[in-house]
Every structure is written in structure tokens, then in C-alpha cells.
Image (cartoon, rainbow, N blue to C red):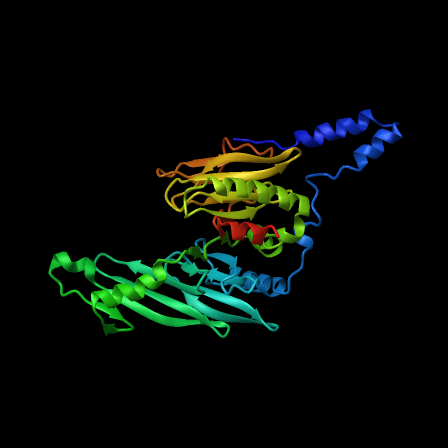
Length: 353
């Protein structure tokens, strides 16, 4: 499915050509701001962490530890307004993420956590963790953020899934047996909080690294006040009619023109509706899509196509540019996107401040 945004530009150019020679009309047209013009290009926005993060990513990219299943993320898991670099070596069950932060001028590892190459982040309480369930047991861990580093608060184990085999059921916190009530009270204190999966967002390609480091965190500086106002008003209207508490959103440049779109994911369950909102010459337009099994869209940077596999593995794809999606096959430059921020009034104001 192709959605074109070039009609506005063609009409505008035609009007300018028709009115050539009429200075009064030209002045009127020239005084109108271009609704699609940005303040600066995303690549021109500079952050202190960019050089060190890019160096680390490029070092890992050529290392023996990097494989086709390696991915990374750039995400603020310390809630200080500066994102961390998260490297996921693989999606194996035992694969943990390494989390790096720029402390002074040094790139410092502040956490190692996860399973299947990702972990869960609880933004309201600054906690990260993971859980893995085998056939007869469940293990997990939670870490809290203190003095610049994440450290283990507690780990847990239970073999409650083996009850049918006649095993003696155990509940453990930090290796010590506890009652079921104590176990559930400790676990539920975290599991009832809003959370995001973090770690596996970008593939390790040159294009992905370039976008992640030099574009993904720049949108606040790129968008004009008028553009932010349009997005803010539209998303506020959408939020007012949204019933899912699991909704989330994210800004991503889905056509490579330096102007981001907004993806709103209605939930993290399989094939949940996902809407893409983009600026046009006459306001904010919308594309209806469908997410993957976790409510995400996948964006191919090289092909400017966003897509999601259905339950059978077939790809449903869309494009905001002139690229055809009829024979689309994903490249190695991919972003998993759509669920960076909880879809709340406070986050809409924060992102479009």
C-alpha cells in the first residue's frame, strides 16, 4: 500500500509558477510558512553521547560477538533525559543486555540484565528486570537504579508449574524459601507497574546505527512549534477516545525526508491496531495499520517501508513514499518501533514541548 505526500508540493510549485511576475501575489505566498519545513535536519543535532555510542556500536559490529540476531537500543532507562546505549548480543534464552551510559567522558557499563536479549523497564519506579518460564519452573530478577548504576534488588524462583508431576512446590527470594503470600507480594509490587520491553530495537547495519545515533533522539529540535502543536492537538483528540491503558506511541521518520511521523500502538497484544499520523499541507493525516504479535511496527530504513508479520508470518506492508510494497522483502536495516512512550497526556506534552 502506497500513500503519497507529494501532491502538496506539486500544487504549491504550480501556484508559484502561475504567479511569476506578480510581485504582490509572490509576497503573499512567500509569507506563508511551509508546513512541512523543519527547523533543522536531524543529523545536524549534536549530543555529547553520540560519538562514544557510535564508536561502541561499530566496535561491536565487527566483533566476533556480533551475529545476525544481534540488535541494540538507545533508550533512557535512568530518567535523566539522556538515553543509554543497550546492546543485545542475541535472542538466546540466556542472552543478557549490556547497558552503557556516558559518565563524564567515559562510556561506562551501568547494568547487565535480561533474557532472550531484552529486559523490561518500569519507568515510574526506575526498575529493570526479566522473567523466564520453563516447563516446570520460573526464574526472574529485578534491579533498581541507585547512584548511577543498576543493582540486583532481588531474584526469584518457583517450580509451581511442576505441581502436576508431584514435585514439592518451592518459592524462593534471593535463594531463600518464602511462603506463597510473601512471594506474590514481592513480585506483584513490580509487575503491577507499567513497563516496556527494551533492548532489541535496531539491527546492526550501518544505516541502523546512523539513524539511531543521529536521528532517533533529535525530533524535539527538528519539529517547529507549529508542527508540534498540530501533533499535540491530534494525539490529544485520539487519546480522549482511546480505551486501552496499554497504548503507546513513538516518533519515527518513516519516509526518510527528515520529518518524523507519529506511530500510535493501541496495545501490546497480537495484531493490535496501529495508526500512523503524518503532517501534510493541510493538517495531520492518518494511516491505519496493524502491529505484530507485540503491537509493534517494523520499519525498513533502506526501502522506506513499514510492515508487520501476521500470525502466519505473512507480511503486511505500507509506504509513505513512492516505493512499491508489492514485492517487498525486508533488508538488514530494520527498526522495531511504535511503543517508546506510554500514550498519556503527560507524555504527549513532554514529547512535543
